[in-house]
View 1 (cartoon, rainbow, N blue to C red):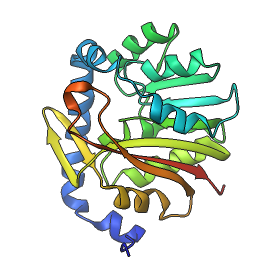
View 2: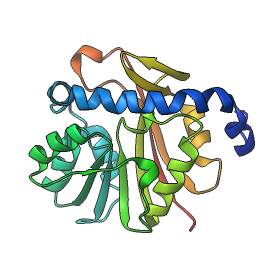
View 3: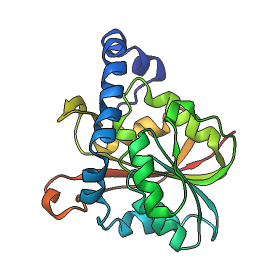
Length: 222
């Protein structure tokens, strides 16, 4: 049986050291995407995410409104739009927003997750490989912002690299999880109910040996 992590324990865990590290690492990560936006898009825009997309979309009504939170190249926003969904694409990197706009044919909004103030606007939130750049101490706040932005009964998808802990890798900050731990994080405050969770291979052929953990949850309270 997995040991649950209480909210207070989570927020206290290494809080002082993280407060010193997070601002610099966050700006560094955004700076990475601003600097390498075109190269990153080239590496990821052709990745086949259909398995995860279909697992998410089957829980949404046709033509519903999706927030693509951390839209990156705009790959997934474009596919959702082609399938008839309405999409609001946002990213913290100005250059990634510029690249995404070329994919989807309209502007993507430059916004950080902690800046979101929407209330019960979206039927679904797609956070593919984006929350993994949010630190463990900041993630509860971001999840509350996402919860507030979802309509009652709305669903959210998120994916993280498989692993344990936080670290800087090649100029970016990463927050990695194992599947059981990820479920605990998303469910512990009673804001969401688990729809499903699963592991996948990386969709990029040269990264096949690096697994991902994926979770889909549903908003269950105001």
